[in-house]
Image (tube, rainbow, N blue to C red; front, side):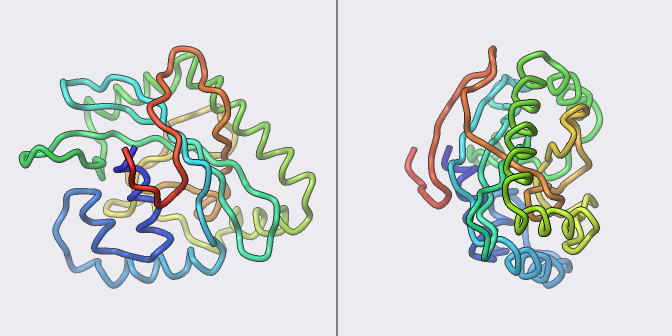
Length: 212
């Protein structure tokens, strides 16, 4: 999915303008703050790899709940950290698909229900198991994971940050408003393994590959 790939590449490149475009928003007074957040993340994260999207229908036509598995490549660590996030994708007035930055109200309830479906919970369990194995196999990764869990990189779940995300224990697949908790943001891992039953694999692509 080109939109999701662009999102991850914007984070790697610390390209706030492109990230804003992904969210369909104009520049605002938080631009410099967001630049600093991306810079802080880049201290830890080198790249996002093996990005895979699974989609479910959204509340309306031309809207989707997209579940994204990926591998985080941390700097100076060979072992990849699996991660899983979700985002709500809609078509804007210009006919372009964007990631909804703040999912609230009925849309939030809808996503929360989707997050509790059997297939999504299975996908979350698979990712968390792979993350656990990765952390246990690499002391360097475990150290970074611990730092991030303790807030070395502050995960801003506030309004205006990133996309929606699913982390950690996998029990509650719903996360806060507006930030992706990647292996860097809140130590969340990933793997682009077999799609869970009932989800539709739309595309597998490396971060930065903007092909459809």
